[in-house]
Length: 256
Image (cartoon, rainbow, N blue to C red; front, side, top):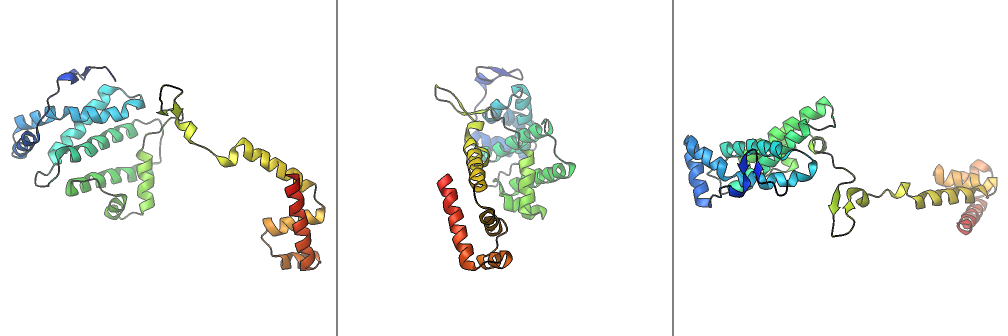
């Protein structure tokens, strides 16, 4: 999208910029039914749409499509904005534009979610927009959950379902050298080569113990039994269990 001058036939280098006083006057006239003021208000905020769609430039979506969807969000923001609230239009308009684009990306996503989750996601979006109109600011997850009378976790899951997937190979940082991708920021300590080697070494060390020592360790650390319970089960004193346990652990440490 960089270097592209025209989007949907509009020369982005010549987009109109409205001053705050002009914006408020056009909003007042629009609320009174002046369609010419509404049209100029839309044209005067196309830069706002352009700045929002640049956030989604890495998604591989067509810029013209995103721009058109963003314009729908802009029109909704203009029609629903309350001029009585002490809030700048851009503060209210940007979340509306972002929400419309995210809805478009979700509906056209290659990933499919269950119908019930999708229905909940639609309700969350509607509640979010309703609260946004009432409060003139972004509602919290708790407020949306209270509005819908749903558990907070269910709202969070629905919002996650609306999020577009991110490629593991998507770069998150680049400074002249090799780019750092999402994959580079993810680590599974349990599945690392070092973890596998430690498990193999531990298994080998345990195999060198006496059968009674292996049995004691299994009862103590796999089944969670006390030394007294182990002593009763295998028929030796608690002091002998303690001694054999310590010897077994010492042998394993030496092996490792």
